Structures are given as structure tokens and as C-alpha cells.
Amino acid sequence: MKKDNIASEEIVADVVADYERRRAARRRFEAQWRLNENFVLGNQFCSVGPSAEVTEDEKDYFWQEREVFNHIASVVDTRLAKLGRVRPVMSVRPASGDDADIKTAQAASKILKSAQEAHDFDSILSDGTMWSEITGSVFYKVTWDDDGGAVVGSIDSRLVHEGDVKIEVCPPYEIYPDDLTRMDVNDCSSVIHARAVPVGEIERVYGVKVESEAGLDVVEPALVGGVGGLFSSGSAFASARGERNDCALVIERFDMPTAEYPHGTHTAVAHGKLLYFGELPYENGEGGSRALPFVKQDCMRRAGCFFGTSMVERTIPIQRAYNAVKNRKHEFLNRIAMGVLTVEDGSVDIDNLADEGLSPGKIIVYRQGSQPPRLMNCGDVPNDFAIEEERLLGEFISVSGVSEIMRSSSIPSGATSGVALQLLIEQDDTRLSVSAELVRKAARDIARKILRLYRQFASRPRLVRFVGENGEVELMSFTSSDMSCDDVVFDTENELSESLAMRQNTIFELLSRGLLYGEDGRLDEDTRYKVLDTLGYGGWESKSDSRKVHVRRAEKENAIVKAGGEIEPSVLDDHELHIARHTSFALTDSNFDCKRGVAARTALTEHIRRHKELMTQKEVENYAAANKDE
Image (tube, rainbow, N blue to C red; front, side, top):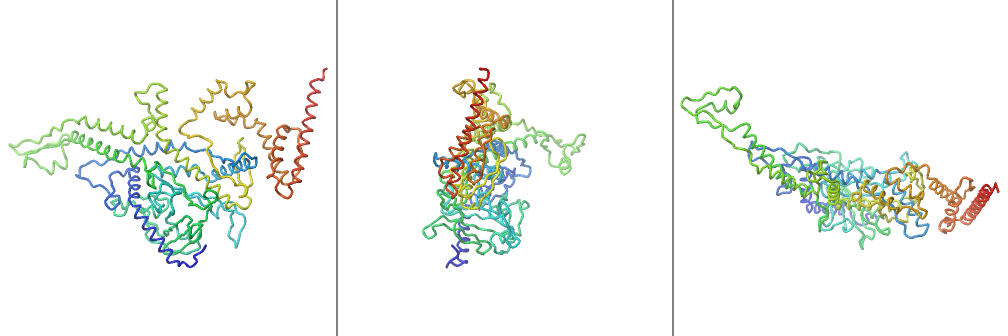
């Protein structure tokens, strides 16, 4: 679908007007995000004005203390450290119990694992979680990059790549939904992604030359991708701003399928020019449907609202009160330490006394017959300050869910037993479980979109590298036909609900009760390997686990026979295991649907017969050796 009969000017005008409308509707959220960022960074004497701008709060008196005692930053750091443990292990669930579906699901799981390692998926989740913890929401844009992946050739001295998945972290400043009452991206009919892009990059991607927009303010995060502004224009902190003169604002609008456009639309404009107008490019929805390329992750969901809420937003009132108490307390201490002088009018040189104060050894000359200067009695610091300070610290814990154990790594004075400490730690993790589940959900949704994009665009054979179960690097070739499964599920529970130490204790209890032993009262090889792997010593068995080596060898032989090659059994093979793997592969019709399928199945049947002969021969030799003396 191209421009057809729609004028470019009309499309550009419609997109820009839609962007301005959505920007105005979202302004109140943006002001809160900026306020959150300021409080995390320590700029805490500011507030949101009537025009939804973050402005500095002026002093009431020149002598007022304005120090910041930033507890919000430590709360955010602690939550990020805890949520950093949430790195779910995922796999693809087969569509059925058929052997072909199981193998396809296993291949998709390996492809997904390779893609996550290649794109440093853990760092992407860490960056996204940082944004969601501060602003309340973050978005991941999962697209296909034609210039990614390995080089496959060149055209007119320009390198041609095989293409690869691209995952971008989009702060909420860049995202504009069509309806702020929708709670998820999939519920929206349209989403705008607006960010500043260098004009050279725009020309390379879209082939359209666009003039730069002078003075794009990096303080405006909605205009500059990945750069969070601290203050809006007109603020007293204007020195913290910067400008980009080599960029233009790119507005991309993604519209879901409608009756007029059954495949949806994707429109991109910049500086009054139409960069692209066509169908939604990605079949990344359920069942191969076209959907929006975004995944949303919230810190905490907000009922009936597209954007989530942040823990920073909840703790700002407590932080303001705490700063006020500490500063008033210090002002009181200053009065006591430095003193407040009272002098009779005209009795002393007021200017000299104001400049130098009461320095040690100072000689004060006062008018004869008048009262000498004296210090007022300011009393002691009221105990109410200490009480209020402790109460506010307690409110930080109750509101943020970050206890004294998590924040300062110290043991509460009232907790003396190990059971009590374990219960406190579990309670801390429970408070974070909601945010942790939202991180896991976002990771799963990203994984599904990755597999669907490979299924759509990986038409040519591709090689992926991944680490196998035994810690060895393996290579696998795949095409889009191998990506029929995209039902991603979690292999691990919530990482906060069960730590490594808790899992290890569970293993020891199961072993002590004999629940892992077989009918002969012994651990089989597979169970022993899994136990050691859970305890963190899986590498001890990686080289001696001969069964896994034989399984890999049998599967390689299956692939060689399917491709028309020839193989010969070895006396070192585990014949029983090889026969089982080869038989299962030979009985699966989908493995031999090519032209040479009949010949390949016949060759594999002959290979199985040779295994049986060698196994029988070995049994005869063993029997003869056992009865040699008789």
C-alpha cells in the first residue's frame, strides 16, 4: 500500500495534528515524570506549576536551610537491585505431543536463547526497569532491522545483511497512545512514537532528505529519545539544558487494522515531509496477525489508565516532610550554636557586629550608660523534631516496601532469631512481587515478538550460536519454517519468591526424605546431574555425562541421514540409546517429507539394524567372558 490518492500534505497535517492533541492530553503525566526524576537526582525543592511545568520553589527567608536528605534515591537503588534478580528462563511450549512439534519447540527455544544472548537481553531489561521504577512505565519496541545480522553480500558497494531483530528501550516520554484510559498497548487502536533522530540517519533509513530543526531542546524528553529532561523551559535551572541542532523530530504513527486498511497503517513524518506511508510491517500478533510493535512494562499498574504509577510518586510527600523537619532542626541548632544577639539601639556599632559577630577575644565598645549586648536564650531543640524524624523514616518503609534490612543491610534490633529474619526477608520480597511479575510478563511478550519476527523474515537459512546443556557452544541452522511455535512459557518461578539458598535447602530436604531416589534406592544419572546443577556445581558432571553426549551424537546422525549422508555405527556407541533415538526419528513422517525421504528412511532403518547387530554381538561377548571359566 502506497500513498494512493491521498495527498502527502494531508497525511502529514493529520499526523502532526494528532500528535499535538495527544501531547496536550498527556501533559499532566509528563510533568509528574519530570518531578520524579528531579527528586531521584536530588533536586527536591521544586513542584509542578499551574501550567504543568516543573519550577523551583523559592525561599521564604534568605536564612532558610535548603539541604536535601535524599532517601528516595536509596529506595530506587534498592528496588532496582532486587528486581535485577528477575531474569526469567523461558522456553517454547510445543503445540502438541507429536515428536515433530516437540523438536520444533526445542529449536525455537534455542533460537530464543541465542537471540537473547546476542542482544544482551539482561541489560535491556535493566535499562527498562530503571525507567519504569522512576516514571512508572517503560516501553520496548521490537522491530526488524534490515541492516542487522551477518553480511550476505553487497550491491553497488553497499553491504547487504541478513537482517535481525532490534529491541529498543523507549522511555514513556516518547509514547503517545490514542486513548489514555486504555490499560495496555494491545487495547489501543493507535500509538505514536515521537523522538529526535539525526538527519543523516533519517536519510539513510527512509531515503528522504530532511532539514534539521534548530534548537531541539534535550530537556524535552518527548523530542529526544533516551534523554530524560530535568526541567521544563522557563525553569530556574535553564543551565541544565542542552540543544541538538542536527536532529529532526520523527513522528511514527502505528494504526491497527480497520475495515479501510485491513493490514493497518504505519506512517512516518519529519519536519513537514512524509517519510513513509504503508501497511503495518510486522506480523507479530497472535496467529500471525499484524499488531503494534510495542511491549509495556509498569512499575505498578494504575486502574483505568495507560501509564503506570511509580513508587517515587508515592514517596515524594514523605521526602518533602522529611527535608522540612531536618532543615528546621538544623536551623534551631544554628540559633543555639551561633546565638542571637540583642543590643540596645545606638549602643554599639551594628555594622561591625553584623560583619564579624562575636569572635573569641573580641572587644565590644558600647555607649556609656546603655545595656551591653547579650545573647538571647533560645532554649533546647524540641523533642518533637526527633519523634517526627523517626516517624517519617517509618513511613518511608511502609510506603515504599523497602525495609531497613534491604536498604541498609542491617538487622533490626528486635529480630534475634534466624526464623524471624527469614520472615522479614520474605515479606520484603512479597512487597516487590507485583513489580517483579510485570517485569517477567514484559520479558515473555518480548520473547514472543522475537520469535514471530524470525518466523516472518528469516526466509533464508541462518546460523545461531548458543550454549548447550553441557556448557558447550553449539551451532544450529534454521529458517522461518522451523518457527511454527511461539508459545513462550516460564521455566522458573518468580525469582524473588525463592532464592538460591532456599532452593538448595529444598533439594537437601528432598534427598533426606528419599523422594528423589529410584526404585533401587539410588539416584539415576539425570537426577544427579540436575541436583548438582541446582546446587551450583553442574560443571562437575558436564564432561562425564556420557548419556547426553550419546543423545547429541544420535541426533546429529539423524540430521546427516535426512540430508542424504551416510553414517556407520561405532563400537563406542550406546546402542540401546541410539536405537531409541533413531527409531523415534524414523517413525515421524514429517522428518521425511522431501523428495529423498524414502531413501533417507531406508538408510536410517539399515543403520538401526547395524546397531542391533553390534549390540547383540556385544552381549554374546559379555556372556562368553562371564562363563569363560565354566
